[in-house]
Length: 87
Image (cartoon, rainbow, N blue to C red; front, side, top):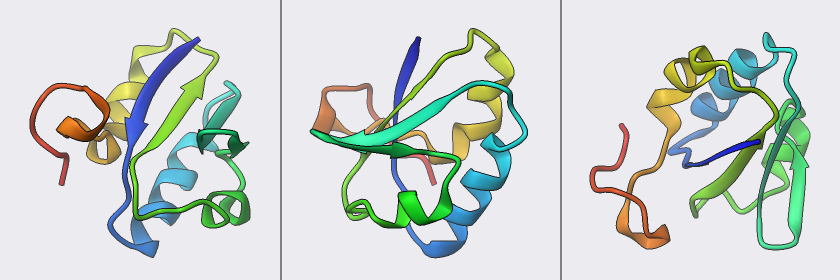
């Protein structure tokens, strides 16, 4: 199981993100705290608080996934990760 933090700036980014991960066989969970949804469900993603970084967990060791979702990966100080917020 891999985990990264992601953040979305607008609705278009959420749509792009879901379209990208739908193409992978892996299971993706997205959430914050106790609220976790299937990240492949656009309605589920929109049910979350998108103003904060979210935790993305997925069941794959495929490094292509990280490459594809790189624009959405959050690297801010809020959650104890490295520097630089992805654009």
